[in-house]
Length: 447
Image (cartoon, rainbow, N blue to C red; front, side, top):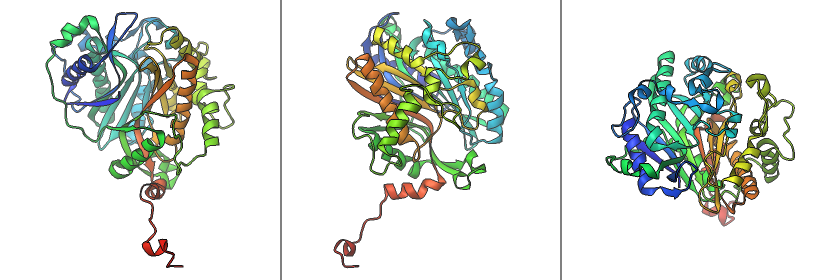
């Protein structure tokens, strides 16, 4: 269902993914032609150098100028590049931020727009996150859907070009390239051409992505804590300027969590929140029921960003869009839609001290009875937040599944930076390695 593919370079990545979709993809109908599809593929590429696969059908003008391929027809023929600079120049602000704080978690391009869902051809790429680690800048894209034979190559070349520009402006070296594809598919009409692609071996897994499979949210939470605490990177954080004991954090880069049964056994005994909090958080902050409400001290909620944020008209110069309602209508009209996507991020997040951690999410039918939810987070606190986040996201998934007639739910979350702050290390240690009573204590001999 969910997998990470490691590749040596862009050409190998293109070839491995297409062969994987061809051999393992499930046939699904589509208004533009039937497809084979694989859900939730995270592609991680070691070499950032642009390299065109000989099997890709793209022409050289598109390769030389990848941005020319991404014309958003439903939005005045703007491009990804336009959206990176309007209404806020995210490149200028993000580069300065990364240059000053090479460890920042706050540089993430908001590419999607709330009105994309209403168009006939919404852009595939929704978000692009950049992370500095040990002198290198790594880039991760999030795409709701990609035709891997015709467009994967161009998406990867475009990410490489963005990464190179940021590296040059910040003095960092280009690191790995990653792309999370919620629906990786190829059209049956292209199967013969894909069949001609050579077989390529995957690269060895590295430290720049980890897949965690779990039956329930608590099981995934504990495995996440163990991975980040025991094997994660360690670096400074911007919060250290305010909170001394949050000046350092251990973190996992690109932690991909697949939860098979997100609605079963939803809270761990050691979770840092209560069920009452989880239900209130889900209803008010994530779903927005019975109404969208922003409380004093809040700039936004995930619900306001999903259902119509009061800041949208000021920045976008157009009306608000209730994306959640639009998603439900689309799933009701086309169960197999690849367009049930919600954008949470906004371009002006780059100006905020607390930009949205959740950036986007996508619903898709995994089979006749199972609705999947895939979420993309730039940053997630593994101890203090992700368990409650996932509880709320599961309730969101349950609500949409009920509204659209699905019986089962499955949830996948990608956190580009899954971290544990220094002030939580002792608490995590106690969860993972609790002190066991001695034999004398168990026998009551030490009283």
